Length: 281
Image (cartoon, rainbow, N blue to C red; front, side, top):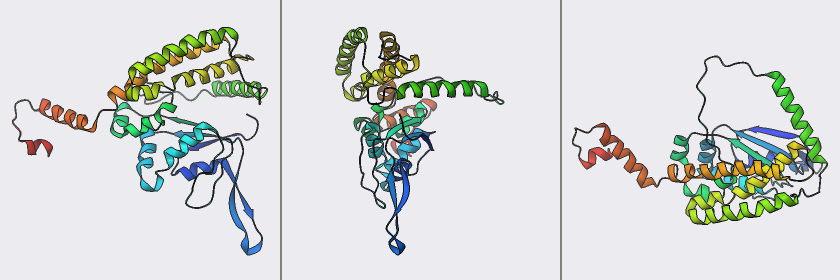
């Protein structure tokens, strides 16, 4: 992780706008022929803080910003690429990109479509479902001491990780033995689930290995130990268990959504007769 510091972007208006965070502005030419260009910053780390996921999805539906999802998918892989742009050419070199976002099941149900899953966009997320805490009129002030301690811990992890620049982080022998049956079991469960559920679950093993690597870095290990893998597998089990939220509950067919509205309307008025036209109105 040597190189540029982390840039935090608060929401984005377009895919090109996001890509500019991975570049610096520079000039080429002389005199009247001087031209402003974007110069790539290799291995730049960018964290996109998108408070509401559905806003991002809605922007990706618009003709003028329809390339947002393609750009996000390209950034996820971490490889250099040069996307087609409408204005200035942009070249991205070895990007490090993370997207943190949230939404409610109700909002996601109204916005999510099959292409969001089949394209590989949603499967790239680690999906966590939680019960919001009760609202507080006067929440406590942020703990500055805890924030400073967290920052110190993260700096220590970063310093430790830099020692492995260019050196693969491997699993210990015991971790390798535990990984194979876990991988095979998840493969069978994924194949049995089929459809969009399988499309999401197919990336869970990848998420587990990433989590195991993070746990190893946090513990200061020189390899992924069995304990690191076991902790990550617990997260993986949770991810597998919550996958159905995005498929069985959120991905209802449009016709089913209309049917639900009709049934709800009729249930709220059990003693009233309605014509078909009045129901659809």
